[in-house]
Image 1 (cartoon, helix red, strand yellow):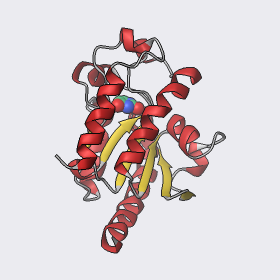
Image 2 (cartoon, protein in one colour):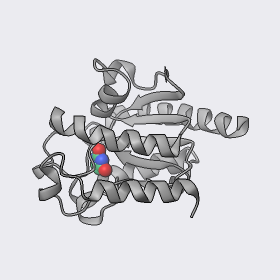
Image 3 (tube, protein in one colour):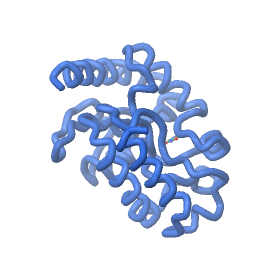
Image 4 (cartoon, protein in one colour):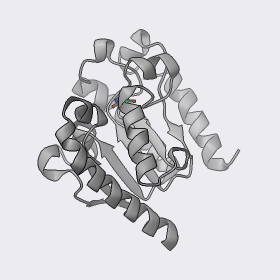
Amino acid sequence: MTEQETRLAAQKTACETCHACPLGKTRTNLVFGVGSASAALMFVGEAPGEREDATGIPFVGAAGQLLDRYLYAVGIPREDVYIANILKCRPPHNRDPLPEEEDVCMEHLRAQIRIIRPKIIVCLGRISAMRLIKPDFRITREHGIWYQRGAFDMCAVYHPSALLRDATKKEDMMEDMKRIAEKYRETMLST
Ligand code: URA
């Protein structure tokens, strides 16, 4: 194991015993994150859904399968990136995360980011963008725009679930993903 893998595994163990909010009691599995511990590109979604809760792996349900298709289309191997969520435990009946749940779970996400040290962070959907980019983020107007936040290049794209509900957003998503892949390849070449 690399040092980053060891540190991530320790962070996951800390997360497994977290009781900072009640969701740890109602979830089936912790959904910590998946992918390369040294990924240059990290995706951050909102919260685990039913399939994720059942498997312990983020983005494996219908929305995740759609995300996989975009990654494949733009030539980014899923195993090269890191995928996580703001919340590590599924909110009952897929309700929106409560602000206080996000507040406490952000500590786990920050720890993951400190260990992985990605160059690019892509928010999947508005909830993640409001937490990581700016509180008044407007996904319809601001998806695909790059923001510099500390050491990170950040942007947000539509949440794949939103694309399942409204197929007219798919064209924008493809354009955004192409630009993300371009930046990712430039970043990989310059490091
Ligand atoms: N939606 C999310 O935001 N995250 C997942 O892991 C699955 C669906």
